[in-house]
Image 1 (cartoon, rainbow, N blue to C red):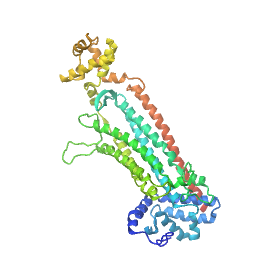
Image 2 (cartoon, rainbow, N blue to C red; image 1 turned 120 degrees about the vertical axis):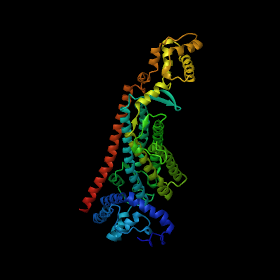
Image 3 (cartoon, helix red, strand yellow; image 1 turned 45 degrees about the vertical axis):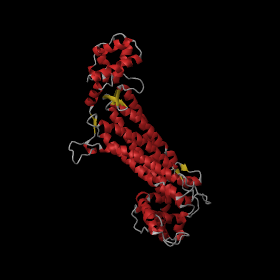
Image 4 (cartoon, rainbow, N blue to C red; image 1 turned 180 degrees about the vertical axis):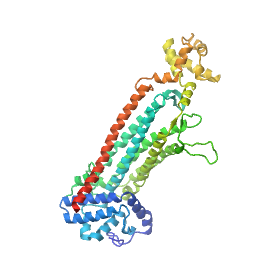
Length: 500
């Protein structure tokens, strides 16, 4: 095969086609898919020989040459000519030159580039996907570790960015971790749609050769062959599912990064990012910018855009093989995976090196009125009034204190009684000691012992559950990685036997 013989097509590709389509595709295939294509070739040839479709002698010669090409590891010593059209045809061209057309030409029996490329894409994405799953679980583990170290780090919780109620930083970590656990479950479930094998679907209409698709599927580490030949080459929905689930996860990560970003400002001063993940100003020497958190927030927007791009490329196209689905839709799949990898890596290093300012967090909770809900609860318990009435008393009390530039820890019974008499017609039975008790953020946080509460033992229970589920997810991931690795080892073993 050469540039003057591309099937029915007699002309070489136009320079524009070479520049904008063929050369970029060859470059990325050399970097990402070189060994993948060769592994698919090996599995297909082994199967053809086992089924008697080609002879064992022909298979041996093809596989010997394939192993030679494989040993070049993405840097072939032979010419890669863009006029031949793509990397696969260049590899096949070398095979034909080394073995002859009647030997090497049998490799492509009962197969199309369509099902080959569909298989290649799934295998390449599968490797990336498994690595990202590992990084995601590393993030979950780092956050569990951070939470466990801070189950007693009392701080103010926030709603609407206003102080709400006392919590602990460990309690906050557990909250984010529950969301990340659901995110990972969605990502993990995408494996079912990803790890099915299209090889054998042909161009889209299957083949009249009695191939063994179960065999090639197993040799390449898939769970099973896809059950319809049209679906084999038409479908890229698994890409949408993977990017979609990762986009949802990136939204959670962005919200988490935003909290840390905000809490790292001097006005809060709850956390400090490490110097190794911070940036400085060229003019303002006091600046320490949380640059990794800024980038992580931005990457959620990119993930959304990549999903929309892939989705838009796949809609309103035929349900069959076409360049829209196999090339244009796939373009930003890889970019999305790379962006999600960067997001995870940046957050992992940020979390592992994060410093908490526990005293600052506690002092803010003491002073910023996040404890007064419990003061209302104390009025309910000790004065026998409804919570709505207690709410009204405390609301007026907070307004009075703030008007007089007083902090929450300065509230006394003398401040409460005039308001109680005005609204309730009686004084409170609370003493200054009971008021201080109600307004103690540590006591407040530790008193919440119901499921999901901020009590340190309850948060430890939550984190232990999260650890158990993470351990389970890691075992599933290890099994999947082992499945792919084992298939590769079996493939190489069978090739070695075939050429021995």
